[in-house]
Image (tube, rainbow, N blue to C red; front, side, top):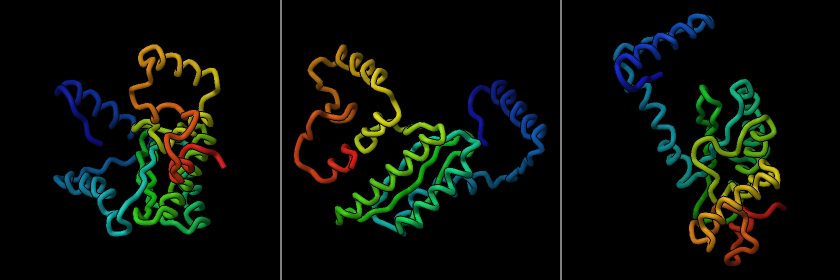
Amino acid sequence: MEFDGEKKQVEMEAKVTMDTIAASSGKIVDPRGKINQFWNARKGAFPSMGSISPSYITLDCTVPRSMLPDALESIQKISKERNIFIANVFHAGDGNLHPLIPYNPQDKESLIKALKVGEEISKIAISMGGVPSGEHGIGIEKLKMEEYYYNKEEINVMKRIKETFDPENLFNPWKMFLPNKLPREDQVLKVMWEWE
């Protein structure tokens, strides 16, 4: 854990955190100057995927913290069933999952397989009471999750807000809502935007 801010605020937050850990029978480990070693291990998780695959998709679906073990088991099961390596990086503190799904950018089928696996993981997270995005937004590859996560009324409200501020649909025209038709014939976009 790392705290940032004004000295008094950091001291107060650190005390509350330490008291909470102690009250929960948790263990506090002082790295004694090895803090960079721990952070570097976490920060190196994403770049280290380069030794496994030239490219990967990163998800950021989120589940309730109590569901983390079940979510990780489900991802492992998908990995075995689909015969695809999935590296699990996640935030234990808030349930934010970052499964890293490798693919070969020279092989369209490899990308399509990765997208479908990501879709399956996102649907599992939502079914566990989670959300399709905890940090990075919906984006193109998760657009169809809107219809799985939000009801029609919620989507209509969001559309009305967008139309109010962007009546000509100039701002990210293919990123916020599923388009009525694809901007071009593209197999990858078809997988991203259309349910089978």
